[in-house]
Amino acid sequence: MPLWEAVVDVVGALLGLILLYGVALVVRRRVIARHGGTFELSYRARSDRAGRGWLLGVGRYADEQLEWFRIFSLSVRPKMVWQRTDLVYEGRRAAEGPEEMALYPDHLVIVCRAPDGRDVELAMGPASLTGFQAWLEAKPPGAQMP
Image 1 (spheres, rainbow, N blue to C red):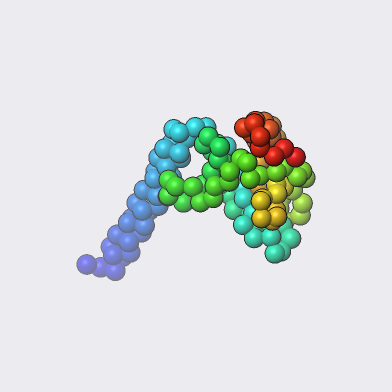
Image 2: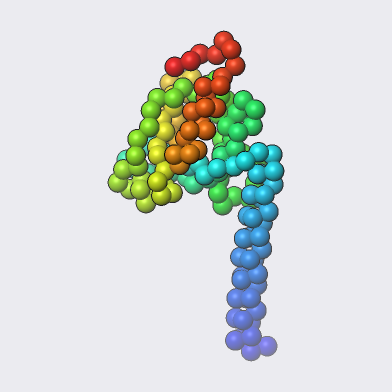
């Protein structure tokens, strides 16, 4: 077999894998959304450098939990889960500097306090923020309110 045919076969196989990956991402998003609506939610995994450490993803409310899924992962299990009773809303701010390039357009950065005292930074759109605040305020009776 000539070399050019082997190259065409390899390129065709790579394009097929890329197409299969894209279809798998769409199917995964549909499976995740089936158990409740999803929304664009970014999570700051590392805050050691200003404006860095943001990971794009989708969020989903599941009873008393906020689940976060990475956008380009094929796993149907959430990468992070936060309990509603564990998050205390601290405030919001606009994306600054490098964050503007790392996040979706018009997303706001939300800062919540976790029980261990560390900050949990999330980014979401204004409409999703309204839903998030309503979800936090709807804590069960006896839960600590900010």
